[in-house]
Image (cartoon, protein in one colour):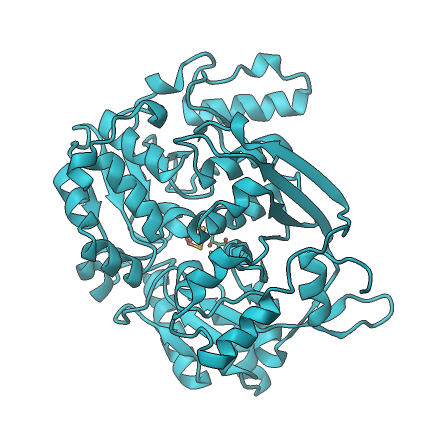
Length: 476
Ligand SMILES: CC(C)[C@H](C(=O)O)[C@@H](O)C(=O)O
Ligand code: SF4
């Protein structure tokens, strides 16, 4: 036995190609995911240099950010930038031999949803994408992180990437998660506690019994938002839950290869006695459902609380940004969140657009009606999520309750397609970012869990789902 190692160190060391003195390490990249927004210049760079995609078999593309979420909208994309980016991706994938899961594919969807669900994402891999929420895939014990467009080109050309070695940060969430408290609440609580720069330069490993108790969907929700705490990536050790999720998926190993893979993956978890640069432990019992109230994902408070008071902030710069956030959000200190009315609800995104999220939201919505002053939409993260939800009758529950049931894509997570807020509209959203204008110019975003979003749609304002009466007979 050598020195005890962390999950991150094991994956990192297995991918080192070269360690030139005084320069970043050259890492081998197992998988590159590609979408329409950050790939055009990378492909163009290759073309200009007369190069090929070195490993098309380790490169997977889909359309997600720009695609409209109605069938008619997809057939005739009005937005010129969107139409061009999508057409360009089609052309590039055909020319460079990259598999594209296009809108007519049964596997199209948000890049971070389709990788795991097809079994392309696997433990121990290095995974990159020109997209910050690539951290999602770390839920499988992969080292997965977002890269810039010039790096996308570098990986396409060489299947390697120069990277400085990040620091390690273990966040352990111990104990049993109270009823009504979800994976989304865990990560909102963490970011609220450590701040949006709390994990800068680090790879977070999420550990502890509350994390081990989560499904893969919940683990993905948590790793997804690592980037909102400034982390380079988030990781969770692969275990039986991981293997059960991956078994039998389209690109998962089969037969003997499966057994060999599981044996390898089982060696990845952090060794007893391994040390981290930083550690934090959170008691799961102290967590509640949260709502973000400001314009950064660190500005969060318990749903039962009131809008916090900037006057209590000592540091002047912090107080100013606090005041500015409240002004943008049109919120007054002291107003109870349960008295804050909303106009829109968005259930979807790579944070909370998976089947389990839709099940959870449907359970809350079943037998109720969306408030007359709210427009609420449910956007499955992928075609497979959509098909499965329809199989289970979730679409019917949502439609009967008055939710708009859409085609898969990033949708209202960001304002790059027709699904946007109008100026001044307030939205309860299951996505991961609440920056000014994120969901449309002048739009006001509150980040919440799928359950909280569904309940808010019905009540017309935020509600504590711990008091929500779930009509079991309707969902049964
Ligand atoms: C468009 C893309 C580059 C961007 C990202 O990197 O995260 C988007 O996915 C987002 O969520 O803001
Ligand atoms: S769903 Fe949102 S966060 Fe995720 S990749 Fe799309 S735009 Fe980015």
